[in-house]
Image (cartoon, rainbow, N blue to C red; front, side, top):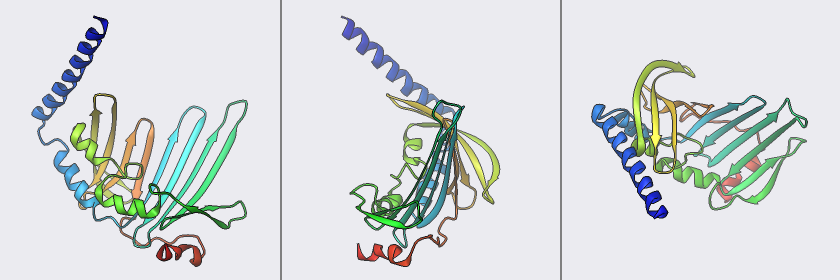
Amino acid sequence: MDNRRLLWIGATLLVAGVIFWAVGQAVNPSGGDTEFKASLEAMEQIKSFRGAYSESASSSHSQRLWEVDCNQVIVHQHSQDSQTNTDSPFEMKEDELLVGDQRYTRDSNGSWENTGYAGERGSAKWYCDNIPRGTVSDLLPDMRTMISHGITEKGDKKTVNGVRCREWKFDIRTAVSSRTGSVCIGLDDHLPYELTESGSHISYSDYNRPIQFDAPPAVLQSASGS
């Protein structure tokens, strides 16, 4: 009896969520769907870009920078995490260069060490193969989920990294989770330039521009060999 009641409650909540989403679509049928679909199509043409992530809490701070150039099949990722106001404050930095299917890490002396095969998922080749499919949600906004599960609200225009974009607020609800945030989409090119969600902020720039990486030519050219 208890299990049936729990199942009934779960089914009721799921149906209520679907109705909530459907009502939102009925009130604002296009919402951000049209713009998000245009953004998803624009993202299929991305060959290079930069992203900068930051998140802060009361005693911790995280930063991440990534540079992607699929013309060279290279992804550079730099992260820095710190925690203060605790008994054991710390700061941790990591510099990683994905070239083709190989991974390099930067030593304390500034040199790059080849740590071998980057794996089937997570190599530069994997990223560059999947960015056009719109499935690399750890580097770019997850437009597919926003389209299929999001309720959107049109916001104001603003400038991010020198580009005019329009902010779209979203409320994503599924059977197992919910989250809210906003994404600013370029007025002319439909590409995402800013994403805010759960206290984190990501800005994007330099779409389809050549990227210079701070690494020896022998390292950078190893993508052709792999």
